Image (cartoon, rainbow, N blue to C red; front, top):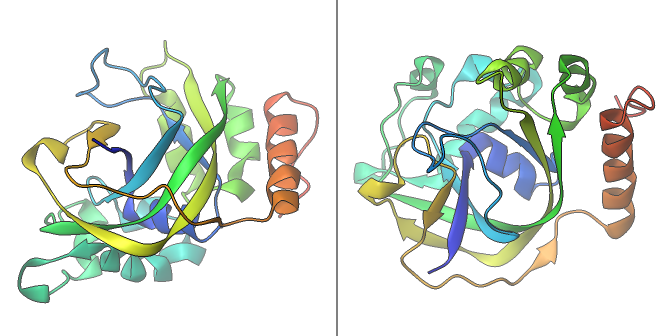
Length: 210
């Protein structure tokens, strides 16, 4: 069965549009070993609304929160009001749309909060939220996973199963999905951005992009 990686719907949109090429992960309470493990090198991106909140997304990307609701197929075709995202109280859709898949370019572990802050040009979350991802479970490092994302030619709608809910990173999709499509970033753009990210993680310099 195809494997998918769960991430906030608004983050999936950013990844699928080439606005972000990394994710930060510690692991959820339903992970097998209670911390994140990079179990797969290629996977689809599954948009979830679990814990997604307005105030944890940078203000410049708040318009994307409305568009992210389009990643769900809602009961009676009525998307919920975005205001419900403020406290994470949004209901779950009946189905979600899979628009992209990713290959892992690199898995980097981080323990220094200054690095997380310096990486802020490369993610859409607030700096405070990114720092909280590092602070949670302080004995475990934060995984920065660089992703080479591809958009599939046509979005595929999959039903939301009960076992997809909750704080887990990986889900098995119960229908065929194509590893097809084109990268969302050119090779040159991707190599330039990943070089900047690696340099920041190694403590070589501050980010050149703003």
